[in-house]
Image 1 (spheres, helix red, strand yellow):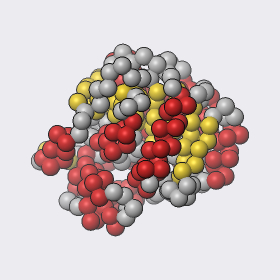
Image 2 (cartoon, one colour):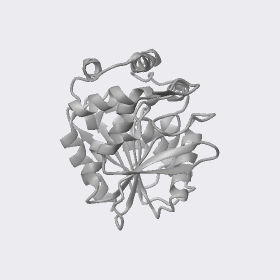
Image 3 (cartoon, one colour):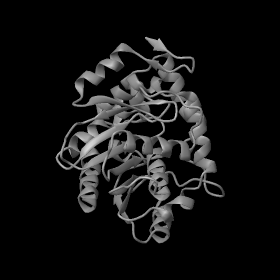
Length: 284
C-alpha cells in the first residue's frame, strides 16, 4: 500500500483492476502535475476525451466507454488529485480546463469530442466556452447547476468527506451498496477499491467551486454542437434546471434519461449508454 503526504491511498487490489480493462495508460504533463489517462486505443475513429466527476477516477468510467468503442476512440482522464494523476496546487474550473487542453495538445488530438459527467461536465463546458482548442462537440451529463444565489449542491461536503474517511479506513462493496444500491456490483467494488485515491483537498476545493462558480455564466457560451443529458429524477439537474438550460443555450440538445438520478450511467447503464450513443451519433 502506498500513501502520499495528502493521504491518497492505492492498494494492490486497486492497481490490479487496471489489468482487467482493455486500455493502456498514457501520461501528459500540465503545468506541473503529471496527468494519467486510460486510452482505449481504437485508432481511426474520432477521439472522445472523457472527464469524470468529483470522486470518480478514470477507471470508474470503464463500463461506459467499453460500449462506445465502435463509434469513437475513448480516452479517459484521471482528473488532477484523483486516480493515478498527481495532486495540483489549484482545483478551480479554469485550472481543470487547462488540464484538458493540455491533454488535447499533448496527445495531438484532432477535433476531439469532450464528454463530462457532473464536475467533468462543468469542466467540459469551460473548455468549450474558452475556445482555446478545436473541438468536434461536447456532451455534458448532469452538470451541477448550483452556484451563487442558487440552491446548494445536493450532496454536502461532509457527506463526501465521510465517504473518503470510509475508504481510508477500508471499505467494501457492501458498504458502498448501502449508499448506492442501484449500482452494478462491479462498480460498487471498483468504488470501494479506488475511492481512497481521491485527494481530500481536491474534493474540498471542488465542492466549494460548486457553490462559487456559476454554471450558467459559462453554459450560454458553449458552442454547438452540444448535448446536455440529465437524469429524470436528478436533484442536480432538476426539471426547472433543464428548462433554464434549454432557454440559456437554444442551440443545445437537452435529453432526459427517465428514472435516473445524478449518477445517470450507474443508475441505468443500458438506457444511459443508449442515450450517449445517440448523442455521439448526432455530433459525428
